[in-house]
Length: 428
Image (cartoon, rainbow, N blue to C red; front, side, top):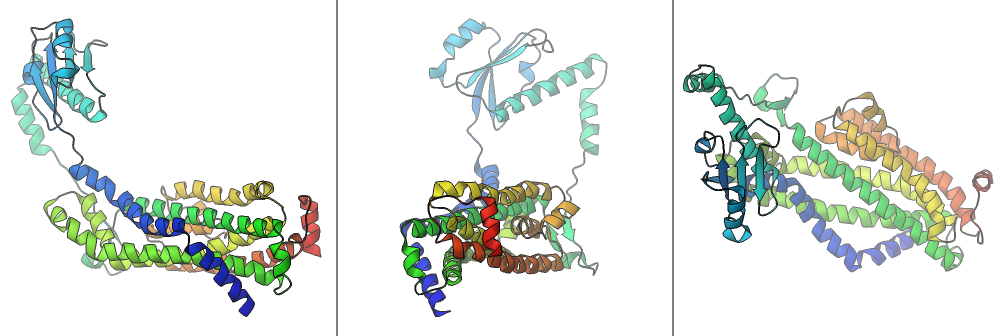
């Protein structure tokens, strides 16, 4: 074990001293917080300046009923032709564009927006919504209806029902039940799943590259004079695993600190004054330090188990080849279940308790990514425990198999082994 510890310390210290590791470790939490908070910030503060639009109305009844909105201000100029309007209100005029309405507003291509710069869906939707409403009112008036009375009736019966989701705790006390939001659960599951995917891929391939480099430079031949191949393999895997866990631990401390102090300070006033349930739920979730800490605890457990499992395969693949390019054959095969996990993860968001989501979160080669994506949806604890136990037991088996390939592969040079030869190494 002392020899294994020396290899772990070497692998760990070699990587954590790199500037790329330090920069990534410090910047990633900011990126993660930004990804979670940015949508709400954009909704609150992302409105653009009001655009001025010149209206040329050939119907004679539409332009006068257009009302300004936070997005658009209308300037009526029915006396201008299209040619004159384009010349007068060009790019240098400060006007956003020209809205031309033909005499038959419902005819094809009758309404045209001529913009001096790129238009946006928000502006077009604002204009279209008003035009549709004006045409509808005119049609009702032509049929003899009192439009103002109809509007008052519609406003009196208009209803907006907000659904608050809570998780049943078996007591029937709604105040004691934990609140939930499917949108926030989706975002958290996506972020955690993608983070775990990147860690397994990046650090797993780091194991493969490290083994190949030491084998090609014959450093491995010196190491085996003092350590067994199994000690070298496990030292390398655990050392790089410790690098990944260190990075996650730093992220956890920074994000939990932000959850405890930064989020309440920045958003408490806005949330108190806002009726946006999504914003309230998001800030409530991000400000729940205990919940964020529990997510990171699960993330560390599944990252460690998933990395150990796949790193064993990467180490075996690296020992069997002489160059990183040759290792791509095995790398593609190793990545297939990881990519499958991502595909299944997308279906988890539709139904986190479906049979495919359940079994994919138990099968060890897909469980790390799929299970971590399910956890924000509040799945039973026993499923998480079964998934973890199965994952770590599978690592023991896979590490034993990988070690049989590793102890022979590190001494083989000159050609890439066939699958039949790999099978023969396993039987030796």
